[in-house]
Structure formats: structure tokens, C-alpha cells
Length: 233
Image (cartoon, rainbow, N blue to C red; front, top):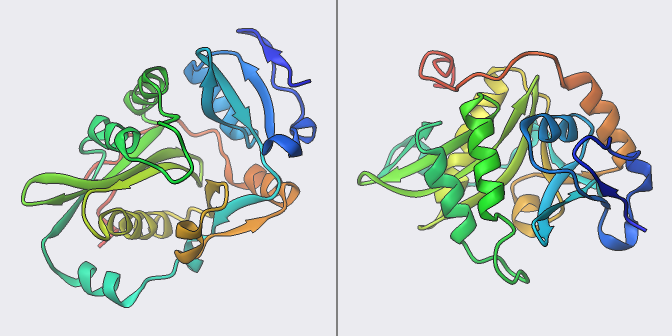
């Protein structure tokens, strides 16, 4: 049986996650910043809710991307050299997460990004832990992504596009930033063909957790401003 977490109940060991249920580990416990940050540091993430209670996952294998393995297509390379798209970091976090929530997903009935999830991640953004990358065209938000940065680890949560290559454009700029600041790994959570086409791959959960322990540090969250993005180029 999958355990139910009270507000102060610690997470069970990730080895107890249900393989038959896609790595489901626990239910409940709320979405406080303390709970969320503890989860990510342990290789656990929330995905969906049941009657308002978050579902916590730690799948095996784990989909990840190493920044140096990012595959840059010719069309995207041309787009990065110049064109109608512009990028910003932490410029419209609410707009990005709302765009992700409103985007239909294959084989999904509705969105897992509930109002409670949105509020929790907006709070993490205000605290400096959650970040967004926005793609703009003619002053309109046409795509982007969001996730968390802890130490030298980035946890990707979701992305969306309202025009071709808009999310890939944002992702390419994210990769540049992560490389410039010595990030070692991006958590992509679960396999999708789209992520695989960009260079992500599955690794055993034990390998993921070992790498995670080396990358997650004790530094505080901070906004990704123009000052600390100067080296992106």
C-alpha cells in the first residue's frame, strides 16, 4: 500500500516506490516550500493530486539530461543565430506556468498542474528556487519552461509552445546558462520522445541519486537576473 503522509511525516525510502505505479512513493503531506525542497533533494517530485493531495514519485529508471549531451538541431541553431524570437529568464514565471497548465498533453486527461501546484511553485519562485525561461515573439509570450535550481542541479518541470520551436529555443538558452554555471545534470523525470530527441536519456535511479548527492548544495535560492546571466552570451 502506498503510504499517506501527514504534514510532518517524512518521506519513506525511495526504494519502496511502486514500480507497477510508475514510481509512486507516497500521497499527501502538502506542498509547502520545506516539503518540496526536501523532496527534490531526495530525488522525489510531485506529479498530480488525488482529492487535493499531492502524489509523490521516484521512478526507476530516471530520465535525465547532461548539459554537454544536448542535441542542437540545424533549424534551432539557425533560430539562435538571429530571428524573430527573444529570450528572458524569470521574466514571467506566472505566465509560463499558466501556459504549461493550459497545454494539452498526449495521453493525459487535463493537467496535473492544479491551482494548488501553481501557487506552490509561484511561492518557490518568489523565494528564488523556481525559475522560468521565456520565449517572446513581437512582445507576446509564445513558449517557455520552468523548474527548480538547487546547488548545481536543475529540475525541469514543464514546457510549452505556442509556435514551432518556442520551447526548444528556451531550452537551448537554459542549457547555455547551466553550462556557464557548471550545472551537472537536469532532471527530466520520465521518458518522452521529445526529451529523448533533445539528448536526454534514462539512467538507473541509484546512479541518479548518487550524482544528485554530489550536485545538490546548501546554497540559498536567488533570482536569475541580467547580472548573473551575463556569461550566457
